[in-house]
Amino acid sequence: MTKKILITGVAGFIGSNLAERLIKEGYRVVGVDNLSAGVLEQVPKEVEFHKIDIRSKDIFPVFNGVDVVFHFAAKNCISECQLYPLETADVNIIGTLNVFDASLKAKVDRVIYAESSAIYEGTEIFPTPETNFTPQTFYAITKASNHLFAKAYQQFFGLKTVGMRYLNVYGPRQDYRRVVAPVMSAFIIKFLMGKRPKIFGNGLKRRDFIHVDDINDFHIMCINNEKVINKVFNLGGGKNYSIMEIYKMIQDILKIKIEPEFLPDVPGEAFESLGDITEARKIGWEPKMPLRDGLIGMIDYIKKEITKGNIKSDTVL
Ligand SMILES: NC(=O)c1ccc[n+]([C@@H]2O[C@H](COP(=O)([O-])OP(=O)(O)OC[C@H]3O[C@@H](n4cnc5c(N)ncnc54)[C@H](O)[C@@H]3O)[C@@H](O)[C@H]2O)c1
Image 1 (tube, helix red, strand yellow):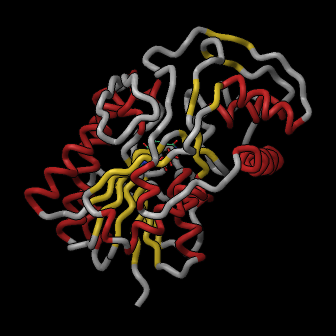
Image 2: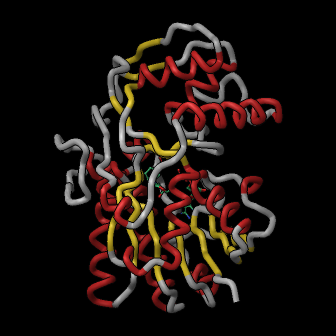
């Protein structure tokens, strides 16, 4: 019998890409999402979909017979989380504990859950190893709290967990609808609309980008591998780029020359991110997607979204 996998946040960026990949690899997939940010159209039709909030007890029966849980559902737009700390904690902490409880009750084999490299916001160590723990913003604090709760669920209840500290994940279906869209989506959309992209700060901030297909390689490895149990892994590209470098690379691919509009910096954002991926490499994982190829794929996806009418000129700030 093929394994049954449950994904929370299945209608979002990472969840929908993983669902597609798991279906292709022959797994049975159950999905949960309250569609607060996700889009139902992104969920592959083979997925048994349940529109439920992760904070609700209604998720419990959905976990019956599940082998592995991928828990992605979260409130994760950093600037919005800064405005609503209570709601952020409710979804990201209480929601996660409800997912852990449902997983325990259903005796699932393991829960692979999303932390975030935002936990390293305050760090001065680059590349940053998993031992670092310097969250600053409300979002990062909820993800750090997920990490501590996962350890306690391991220790006191024997729940097997795997923590994913993604750096900046990019690729098709990246959520461009947020209050502040992720940088690559925002630039590409503005360029394709013939408008000036906005840069918050001076463009010198450096970010570590990882393609969604690469992190899904690691997710697939985690389904059966015993070496990952009760550990946490950075998943990044192994190098970082300044925002201006990304801007120029996209301009170069599109052969468009438009000057950016510089705006004041977003408070709380780290100047640099660069994950140390030694631990994930020890499992046999390696990021493969060259940044330029990944950007070309993302541009193709955004062009199709514009043609479908899903992106309008006022979709991103
Ligand atoms: N994308 C990145 O670069 C990145 C980096 C680090 C960590 N992460 C983490 O990875 C996970 C997935 O990120 P993503 O980029 O796919 O985000 P996303 O916003 O595209 O997807 C999240 C999904 O969760 C759903 N959701 C939100 N609140 C919910 C609730 N209360 N009940 C049920 N569903 C709910 C949303 O509708 C959405 O479909 C998140 O936990 C995020 O914090 C992402």
